[in-house]
Image (cartoon, rainbow, N blue to C red; front, side, top):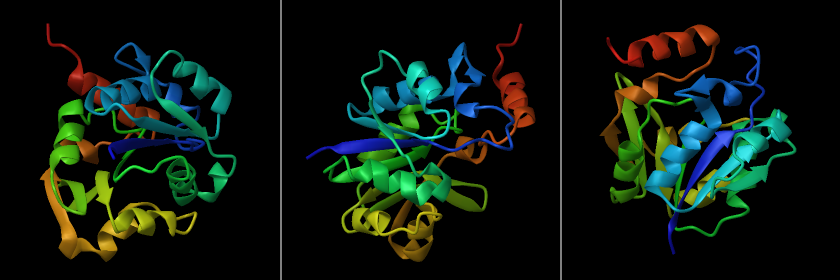
Length: 190
């Protein structure tokens, strides 16, 4: 069997003030950009949507990804992970987030190709998504509390985690100021 990349994009984005999944990043909606990067690394990509589902679904039109709508997205990221896992029998699950626009397809590919039951991105003194989960930890993801995230599985099993440096994973887009700062940092110099 093959691997799957799961993109969590179901949240309301209340701190952002509007659907951050639709915020522009490099000329297209953030959810589309992140999904295109994932598709460049893996042929099986599941995007979990919830809040703003019709708009996010439209932003993904024409992409060769599977869309799973989590009707219980308000319960938290664990519920979105379980919704995605209910549709997959993959041997490996790479979990990433819609608000990590600087994580590249190359980094996702590195995570997919690195052996071990748990492979996580590391930055500064922290670690987390994007992260790869293989047996027996896919079952642990399926048992998460709805409000918990995949990082809790990594933390509980830290001795089994292989870390891959990815400073870009530290820069998640939680508000408009962060997005604008990232845009300015990555703008072409003239």
